[in-house]
Image 1 (cartoon, one colour):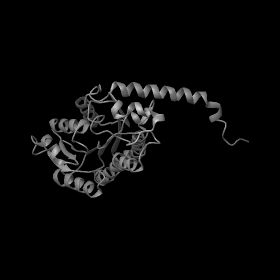
Image 2 (cartoon, rainbow, N blue to C red):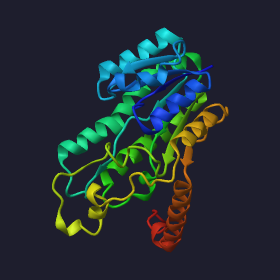
Image 3 (tube, rainbow, N blue to C red):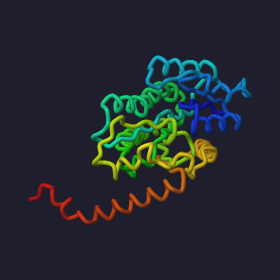
Image 4 (spheres, one colour):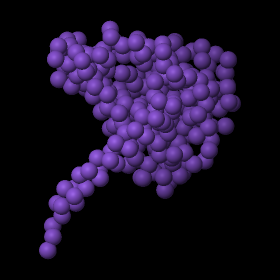
Length: 276
């Protein structure tokens, strides 16, 4: 039995994962900004479920959540940084305050959670961290520049962290889901207040009023949850986990295009060394 601490459990993947973890017989610290919204998840698991209020941008709540988890269950064995939200705007359109709020939640909130659980994981020489990223970090669609940037930053951090803590018995996995049937493209999605007409055919096509994705995504959050549990229990979690046929396919397309471009510019790239 492992103890999982999952952020952002009110809807979508976080909710599905908390439910699956408890159903599998593990302990789960189920968190959300509004704890009342997730009480039903742990209702049937009085011994293994712990519901806590947690806004990952509140450093005091972050520290308190980890403290309570460790007091109740003895340790945090698996951290899942799932809390986050989408934001759509052309790069030029975005409000500075919106950008900073997005990074505070999607990136710095995860950083604070990681730093809070690592002392215990280092002491036990064991632990697993899953950082929920997005295929958007790789395909960088128009209109999602800032969201993609938060996830790219999280993946960069994940790679370096993995190199730092893997010798200590701690695994780090960045998870890149494709489009899943969650609330991400609906209520949770925010966007710039004032669009610029010149971007109507690029970023504008992905604004909420023009988007038809919500409710039509192919991904099943329940299956994604089972996949993450399987990886956590594998004993050898990968550095990167793709979820969804769309994410798998898009990863390959981007990788192939990058390799082709690399070769196209090889002579120029390799001409910049000091010679003689």
